[in-house]
Length: 245
Image 1 (tube, rainbow, N blue to C red):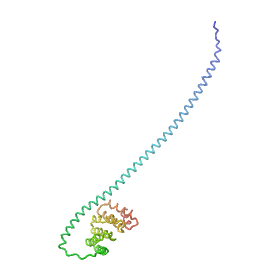
Image 2 (image 1 turned 60 degrees about the vertical axis):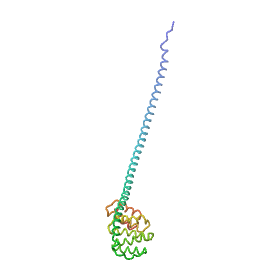
Image 3 (image 1 turned 120 degrees about the horizontal axis):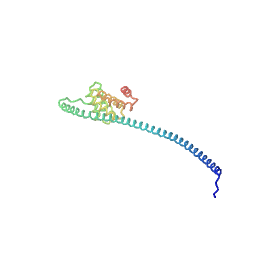
Image 4 (image 1 turned 90 degrees about the vertical axis):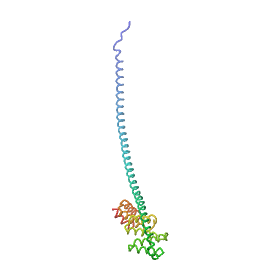
């Protein structure tokens, strides 16, 4: 016969089982709390990292915008300067073509009158005498006669130390006649050919003034600025600054 197992024998086993389950539950709850804490920490760090990344992106966007704005401004500036240079070259080329036709007509008219004109008086041949003779006629507003003396000096004495002055006064004779287009070209010879001439600041100023008198404000301002930049201490630069104000 089987003996009956007494119920009180199960009590220790049940008590041990209940204690073990409770301890496991506490461990699980502690692990859950740790996981929640770590999760919150990770979320906080992620939020900070995302904020930093977004800040970097915003800074990059602002820098790109500034670079694009600077590039746009540079393109506009270079385009404007290129346009001014193009206008000046085109203007000079146009003036040269017009003046070539006029000079051809004048040369033809002079040739026709040579046979009927009385012989001209002898002209002094020294460069100083030619320059002085031309200046005297220029002061009397005898512009064509003055040009003949200056031109003769340039033809016979092209290497003369007075050649730059003779060229400047040729331009002055056309300016005196209010033939500003021709004066612009003659002043340009002084500016381009006689770079160390004492007449160069005056040539820059008078060329700018000639542009202004023909209604070409763009090239006039460009020449006034050149004068101020290259010869800032000259008396002509002081006049140019007043023009640019």
